[in-house]
Amino acid sequence: MDVADDYTRRLRDVFDLCDIDKRGYISIDHFVQLANEHFGTSGWDTENQEVCLLLCNSFSGYIFVFYMKLGN
Image (cartoon, rainbow, N blue to C red):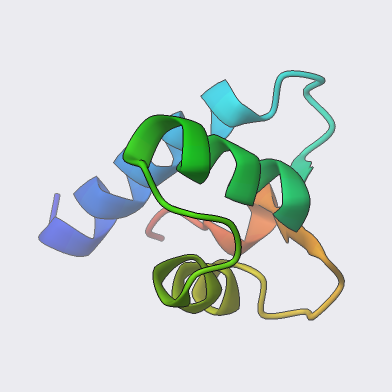
C-alpha cells in the first residue's frame, strides 16, 4: 500500500465518523462546525476554506464520500 492509499483510507475513516446519518456526504456547515469544535478554528477561517475547497470540488456545499476513492 502506498502513502496516498493509506492517507485516503484514514481520511475515509474520519469521514465515516463525521457522517453520522450515513448519507454518503456531510455539509460544509457541519464540517466547519466540527473543525471549530475539535481543532479550535474560528468560523470560516482560511484553513477551513482551503480544506473545504479540496474536499468539496463540486461546489455543491457538500463533501461526498465518493471523492475519497481508494486505490485501484
